[in-house]
Image (cartoon, rainbow, N blue to C red; front, side):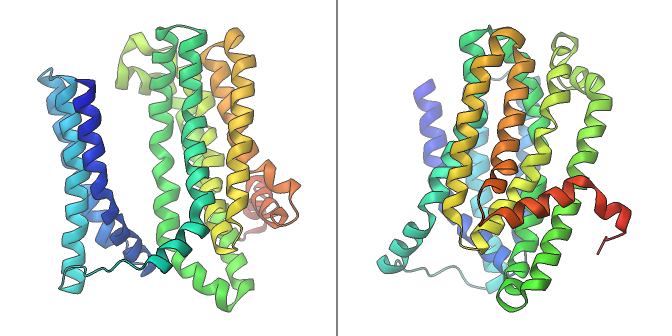
Length: 319
């Protein structure tokens, strides 16, 4: 069954090449053409998963749902493109252009891989150093914490193409608007974190049942990772705009090292709580503190510090 599930998810992932249509709409600040159809597919897939749970379906059924969700999402993008352009894409491969993109993007590819690894290292090490019950509590908390990570991605994908035009024409306006975006991302993420801390216990019980109540303590710590994820998403976009993509790889490498080291130190003594602390510190190191040690990114550190300090609220700089 494992081979079939891997094959299903791998084959359906091939269709994700059509995600270039989504980037096309983002570049034209027409995200509604991609967000609306993909959200419709996501909603339908979520209903299908709930139905499958009530029917006590096998793991293979959930794999089919996930595969169909990916395929239908890409088909929805293709339909949106046709609605907008009244024609289907007629793309041609240009090797010179492809090679240039690969040379520019390879640090981002490796950085994304490192981030994916170190954001999941904690669960692997928990399984090695504790037991499956602790892993279950931690996984439940992470599920509830990471549900908000889509928010900064959606905001940045809608706003950053316009800001790129500002960067090329009026840098002062560009940095003013980037600062405003940092401010509001911090405000949103901290509001979500505080609200989650307050309602963590009932939310965990509602989502997973009383047996998972120990996950609430882990959630109250892990949720603060979102603050640095929010500013990290915007910081990553800013590095691309300013042609500093190799620094993104350095930040991801730092996060991986810090996360691994702290997990080794904290998990044996504190279990899931220790792993949540390790993830929080690693994300803060990669997305925030690392900018202070490089003169080319020190302006990012100052902007993030100003947003995190909340001084802009006192000074009334909301626009």
